[in-house]
Length: 204
Image (cartoon, rainbow, N blue to C red; front, side, top):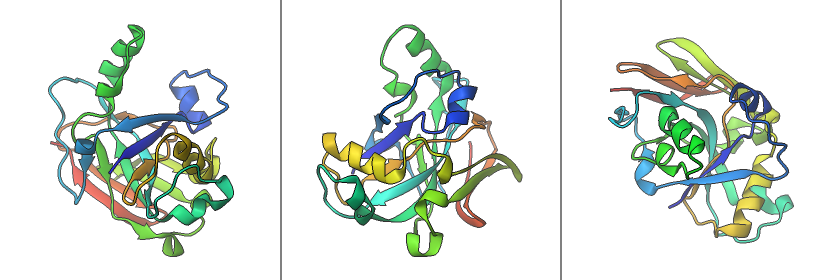
């Protein structure tokens, strides 16, 4: 099982992070399989970071084997969706970027890919017009809509499949909108697709 993630896929988030690249193709990075955190288990802030940020994202699950998938057929390779959190050790990421070094350890560390309950697209609706949001301690801190993506989900699936064979169970995190921020011990995070809660866990 692979965890594939897309960076810089919402213009407003790119602005808040001071990214000025004009993107012509998706920005892809990977998370280790040990990054997966599911079933509402708590997230423990790692001792190597003093600034762990949440990044709320729509996540799809691949359900067919695929390679070099044409964009027009990409919708055939997934039928479930949820909300996930791409946890980022922001202080570590900033330092590594400043040094011109790879920054995987700030993104792919253990339990950094939180995943919610998957629901079928037949229930969720149009994958390119899904509203989602994250509440922390009962207050909405981040919200977005997949209609605002720079690269659509089908374009992402097609692009990724040029480089990696997609296998059943692979997860694709599709990017985060504006509003990322830090978490603290005892925070209660709840993620929603529309009004349906699909994610619920605590930070420890």
